[in-house]
Image 1 (cartoon, rainbow, N blue to C red):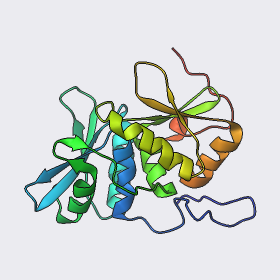
Image 2 (image 1 turned 90 degrees about the vertical axis):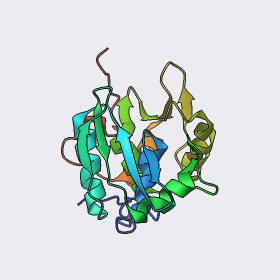
Image 3 (image 1 turned 90 degrees about the horizontal axis):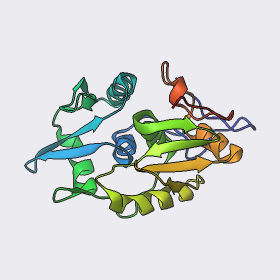
Amino acid sequence: MFYSVRVDGTISLFSAEASGPGLADLAGVLCGPGRMAGFGRTAARLSAVVDEPWRAGALARECRRRGVQAQVSAAECGRPLVRTPFRVDLLPLEQRWTRGEEKVLPDGFRLDGAMLRMWALAAGVPQGNGYLLALDPEAPETYERLITALAQLGVPAKVQKGEEALLRVTGRRRLAHVLELIGDAPAGAEPAWPSLVPVVRAV
């Protein structure tokens, strides 16, 4: 069990602990590398290619907490892949997050702590005095709206310049708020969790 508690002992309204796990939380994976695929108009599945095996395992466990079995395998590129079966109850996610063959951010989309936790598990990493959240390089039209969604959650972020598509959150207070929202790291995920101590990563 993870907890997201304010210094006054209360749980944040938007934290991952504010409500029980639900299918809507899986939208956090779609903020990063996740993709939805439909089977006609009858079912859909979620898949995500991630950088480390532990991420795929952690996402599979989070899917199971929401009543969705997920398998971990290797993608064609050799990186870890987590993928659910086609399910009727995932069809609403597919319908909201895809337009034709493109991934889109749903109208009126709002992040919460549970979604942000899933995003962190899929594609979050500390760097220096900040925290990076990877974006989908094939869905650049989602970037500005995701920045807006983070800002609405009280987590201002900027696109980090470079070859990779990344959002960067900086500042001790903002990182503390991210931790408040997403709760404690699951076992094995600690090196990829936000840190209030500057992190120096090996080049």
